[in-house]
Length: 266
Image (cartoon, rainbow, N blue to C red):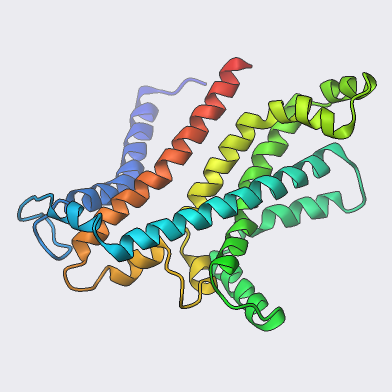
């Protein structure tokens, strides 16, 4: 489809405006992390590296980063196992209610976070009587991180088909051997991409975390929210926010690279 010069110019302007709305505020946060001001003022009266040094010596921030990493790794591990099993079951086998199960697997990521958070909070506290903490956060994050793994794996399974697996079975290989030597190698990049996206999604999640963390666990997004308006903490929060953006962008970038490399090989 060819566009006129006017249409191309209009599309370019609209795209530039949308990108500016998304990324200019991130640029402001980055610049303010070097500001000499102790409040969120613009433009910065001067520039300094002091806040970066203080941020990486802040015990609360470092503990929050460690907690977020632990939760994200655990949620990602659970998502890789359950998401892969669900994708294989729904793609390779036919059974009654398969479409309904597929919808239920995908639904958590489409629901508003506050609805998911309230539902899980009620489930943990009133139905199974579990104390809120890291365990409940991991379970809560896994409920929606599974979807990213599931979508990547089921898309790969649809593209690869079943011919190689059937050939492996015809040659006498069992189910586990076929999965280990045939199915899994075809899924490696999809699993890596899904795992990276799941990690990024868990690492910076705050809404569901707020309802399932209780009072004893502070993740990095919660730490940022709690310290944003405290005296002399705003510049440090800006530094941590920049770190959070980097932690979120890198996994997504790697996942895109893996997906691009897979497409190139095909």
